[in-house]
Amino acid sequence: TAILVGTGRGAQLGVLIKRPQVLETAGGIDTVVLDKTGTITTGRMTVGAVEAQPGEDADMVLRRAAAVEAASEHPVAAAIVTAAHERGLTLVPVTDFANDPGTGVSGRVDGTAVRVTRAADSDGRTSVEVSWGGARRGVIRLADAIKPTSAEAIAELKALGITPMLLTGDNQAVAARVAAEVGIA
Image (cartoon, rainbow, N blue to C red):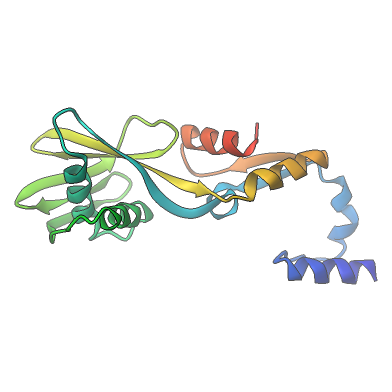
């Protein structure tokens, strides 16, 4: 009866228990590995900051980056385009769009060749560098927002004597920032 109730309650909470006998050994769990994206975080990237180089305009950096990114389907691209729309920036069509998987995108905006590439510097957020005319014009910092319930859930696991661990394909700085925010060592 207890196993039936346990698997039924798990299903109501969105937890699939493949073999009910697993419930008998669950009391011995001492470590839980949690995926970052979509579990600890919302899985939706948002722009946190647009850092223009001295003498550059942050709105121009965002507008040109968004114009190029509008032709891409990447979650980072969608976040940049959304941020531009939220700031009321008008996007012009991009021409000569090119996608270099794992590196970034490029295209012509207002007749200017614009590149949006992975930034070498990171402060624990996903960062892209925006350049044109052979010069870096700014950096756009993005983050996957942490779910409001994540820190509480981590605290509850710890209170049960369970060690939470974070698993992610992101770089070390991003992983460390998210882990620190929710209380994972």
